[in-house]
Picture 1 (cartoon, one colour):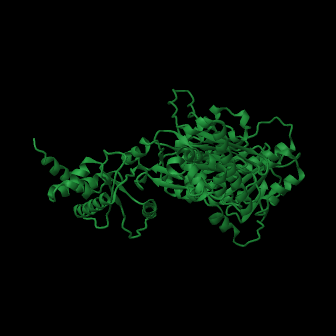
Picture 2 (cartoon, rainbow, N blue to C red):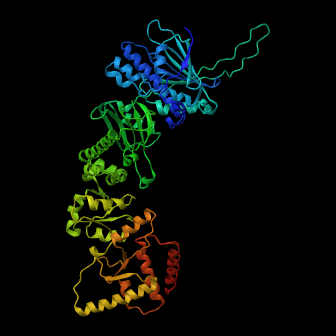
Length: 626
């Protein structure tokens, strides 16, 4: 074959610098592109010779001594004319032209679309060599070489078997890709589930030194170390199987292997549809904790079994990012680098479909396995609530599956809670965000048969406001157990004289507590509580407290004082004694102590407040006479 020389056909003067510097977001993507080309060559060969029983594979070889990475496949190969058409013309993809000639069910297996993947090699290589032999009869081997991606040289090659070998002589600033473990990790990440077998081997130099030869005998050659050939994608892509053909053990093993975790998922959603999208995947529900806001899941996006990226927000709604899983959509409208998405309308429909399938799984589980769903609820409720707040359609689907766990450990839907407690509360839901600290207030409700639900995660502050507005229940309100004392206050008949005496007592106690606490904005109510053992409660208006807490969460200081109301139980002996006591230090100490005890049921005391509380406790103990 005569040697020919020429210039690569391009339509933009500076396209190679763009490809090398800007087209691909990560350098290591060149490995994915080289292997994808090899897989495409195999798919083409299978389409040409569908009855062949040959074992196909892509082999990636790391030759550290030579400073090279080689990508070898036994696919269809190329003639010199095909090289000129497919390699020398940047952005001319042979995939589309090939598919026009070979229509059939297997055409979806071809990865390439843009004809640019090959040129990612020049991000890391100072020289690229192609040795190829076409499957066509009487074809001759071809060698293609280029040092900059702009000028090339084609000559007769030396390959004797059908297929293609691409050799990258790595540039000085790309020596990191001579690291065996780095290359293997990249291959596993991007090619771990490719449809064609992918192998990796790292050539090892001879390490054993031969023993000295005896006199008159020939010296032995150093022993050669045979490279280990690793099957990168030995495990199949479980998401391609029909759900009915997958076992629970397979689902669990796949989860642990792909995400490198030891715990088991709660449950999963297996997506396997051909219409309206060619979409397959598995989404797992991991165990979530109250700090879910600081955690991120991991959803791997594939296109035709080729890994694209993790957590692409255009496809996966942000609230689903708490999950772990894989999504494979061969029809994803990727840009030329396979790193970003285009065609916004298609992607939005795909995202909405995934959300709907997740909601369908929750609704189905709630309806068919309510007891099991309740067991899952403690782990998944932050995710479900966050999804409801973020996505109105998701909320519409799952709103009847939202559970509220009571302090007694029961799980109730909103309608179930209202049906049981409506006679006492109307359309009000009573909740606690700290059952231990608010135990006194919780007990007052439960003693009269009222359920108190636990809402103690970060999302709940937003969620209760959202539900009040969105649940479709007129007059629905949520109130924390310490929002008011009306539900456990006794209504007592009193004549005018008794009312006047009560007003005098209230005014006296108000003056006492303002003086003892130094809080001039404090409000005091003098009421009879259902629990006579509780001397005082500190309550705060629900809406005012929510507004203040939201400001703290978002780092905003609204400069608004927190207003509390101290409810003194006039049926309690301590309060009665305090009212009858003479003015003095002891009375002030007891008043301040009662106030702090009431505060401790609402919020933790600050450092200075704890110090004052302990000092006061010691003073009061010192007044006890033996």
